Amino acid sequence: MEVLANTKVYNNYQTAIPKEMREKFHIDKETVIEWGIDDNGEPQIKFRKKVTVDDVLGMIDDDGSESSVELKRSIYE
Image (cartoon, rainbow, N blue to C red; front, side, top):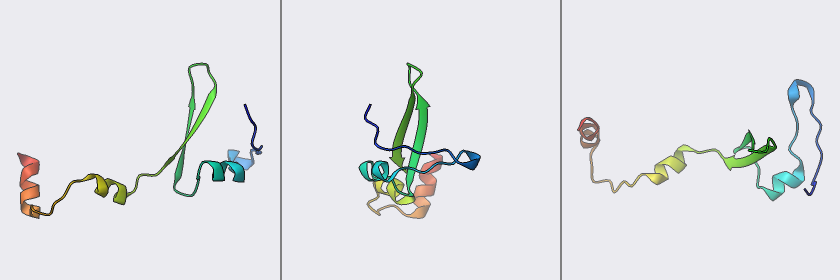
């Protein structure tokens, strides 16, 4: 394993993400850090971006042809 940086655990178990890691993995305030343990009992850390409302809206195919009344009716069908 290549060690890029070291950190210290502070009061309340807080730590800082080293600059080298933030830059390499594009970590910012919108990043979620997922902590896990693999099958060998080793710690795993993954980074992913938060899902925003704009991300979700981009997934919906809306051609604008339905009115709000039609959309509401389709829920109950």
